[in-house]
Image 1 (cartoon, protein in one colour):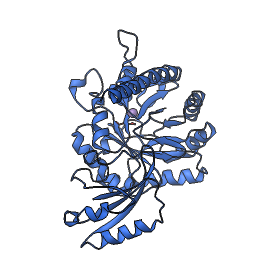
Image 2 (cartoon, protein in one colour):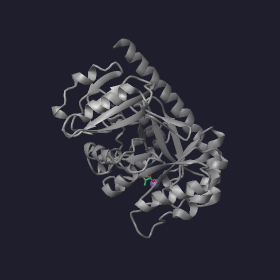
Image 3 (cartoon, protein in one colour):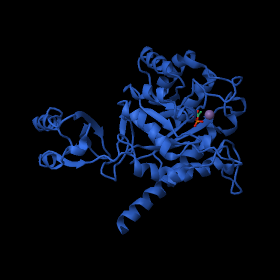
Image 4 (cartoon, helix red, strand yellow):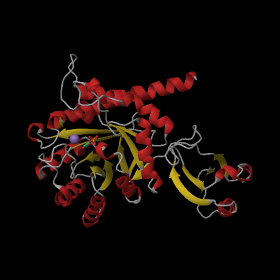
Length: 370
Ligand code: PEP
Ligand code: MN
């Protein structure tokens, strides 16, 4: 059961303390208080955990400072909307706000290879006023003989370059629990030159120990990528592992699913699930057109398939776009064939601006006619 307090309630409110005492007076009930950033205001929610079926809602609804009491459905206890009873949660991290009410672009390197490429990429982003990017240091590869990423050795200069170009968030995949501490320490040693969003890749979508590990820390948000060969429900449950560990700053990322039916694309594009995930959960939703499409083919209309698919995610209301770019895709050590060139960032930004505007107009129009 979740008791949603009225907006902007002070943490030391005596009513909140009385409410918690009341909750704990029921047998076996424990409480957790969460402060969350809602779409338009900050909220306090009190979670009642344990045998809540025996706890009535009425005594809680009587408190002046209570907005509503929501019974949690079995599914997605922490990330779920619970029949639209709860509003989405966004978060602010290192000065950047991410939420279901906005869109943020994260173009960047699939894998960090050289200092020059990192610097050139971040500089190009800075020229477009983009402060959010991706840079893979630990790469999960299908073959053990492929480039595995530079690992912790590159973190100091990646963070230094990010700081130099005003990058606020770098998404970076972790494939082992020890990487979290390596990143945390390198960030600290860089004087927090930037921020990192820990990425869980599709291959680790059901690595429950890793999910628990990123969920057990609160310093860095988590970008959870949907499992490529499991159902949406299974992926959402896996994501719930992160939230149940205590970290609620999570973005859910769609990146295509594995199926020969998607050929000639690398994966079958699943961006029709953007509104589904937004309806079922409180999380912002990201799309990754690069790992979905996997190649730089151009349509008969002259537009890259990757841009078409990006537009599909954005018109569906995506809140974040994770997309591969590289200064020289032909020499990239990982996923070069799907990377946009730095000169194409301009196309990307222009295209996304048009489509996002169209999405907002659609939403306003439907709100008026409803
Ligand atoms: C990536 O984003 O670098 C990546 C490996 O993606 P995925 O886990 O979706 O394959
Ligand atoms: Mn990749």
